[in-house]
Image (cartoon, rainbow, N blue to C red; front, side):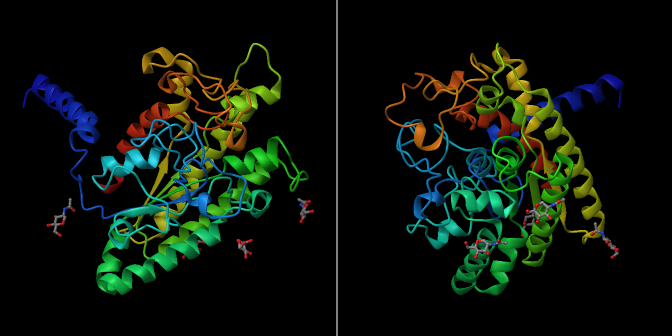
Length: 356
Ligand SMILES: *[C@@H]1O[C@H](CO)[C@@H](O)[C@H](O)[C@H]1NC(C)=O
Ligand SMILES: *[C@@H]1O[C@H](CO)[C@@H](O)[C@H](O)[C@H]1NC(C)=O
Ligand SMILES: *[C@@H]1O[C@H](CO)[C@@H](O)[C@H](O)[C@H]1NC(C)=O
Ligand SMILES: *[C@@H]1O[C@H](CO)[C@@H](O)[C@H](O)[C@H]1NC(C)=O
């Protein structure tokens, strides 16, 4: 084979690879059976609608760009990253909330989200907003497994679980509540110590998922927390710009998480795949080069002034931007659907390597 042929073949396969998520949106590229998701508001499609918490997004303008234009509990104008991923995996268009009483067995076996907006890996974070902590989310998964076993038998259930992708997306609330903004519970420990504590909890979660049969586990890293509109506002910086120290913390955390995952990977059975999902890079890319992604506004949310509104303060009385796809953030913390779509494309490439 000549050099140029090799080159054009590799360019072609690179192209094909980039198009994969879009072209095969209705056909699974592998035998992934389901997507099971745990974590916070970045991946909660509405579990908090069914629990007594103030951390909710079950009101407009949240959800206004969903297919039915109704609020679902998702903390954004449209779909979450995990909705896009479920679609790229050929599973479904919207990943439902486990606590939704209308959830059918058929929906359950192709994946659900157990996540709860406001949660963190530190119990102090969860108690503050009375949301579902990780152990409750995992208990709910155990309950879901029992439900599948009754319906489909133990063998089929085991196959569904071992060929499913598990995603954990959490940690930003812990940093906001305990390290940066409120510092109520853990004001005596350093950011580094707190990172190590979050990593220990992540390791325990991976072990527990492994014990219940999960074999493809992906952990989302920290975003550039210093660029969240809320953080920029609280810093008082003018003109508005990202807080470098908080972004540096996120990068440090992500390197340690990557190391932890590769250490754990070498200790687990060969059929087990751990995957680091980088959210830092795609979000930073959009903030640094907004125009190349079609964005006009980066460090302010679409909802209200864009400086602080989120949850209950982002509501029908907030003057909201006409076109959220021009904004990286929908409210003061959460990405817009357009930003999530970009993030999910890069994450899908990483998941595709894991399941190849
Ligand atoms: C998917 O499953 C089928 C039948 O179980 C098997 O023949 C095939 O090799 C699998 N494909 C992949 C990509 O694992
Ligand atoms: C998680 O929440 C449940 C229910 O509120 C509580 O009973 C449990 O102690 C919490 N778990 C941890 C590890 O704190
Ligand atoms: C920090 O404070 C908590 C709660 O008061 C305590 O349990 C913990 O041991 C302290 N940690 C350090 C490193 O001093
Ligand atoms: C890996 O396994 C070895 C031997 O079983 C054990 O000593 C070590 O603590 C494990 N490391 C991790 C990170 O689990």
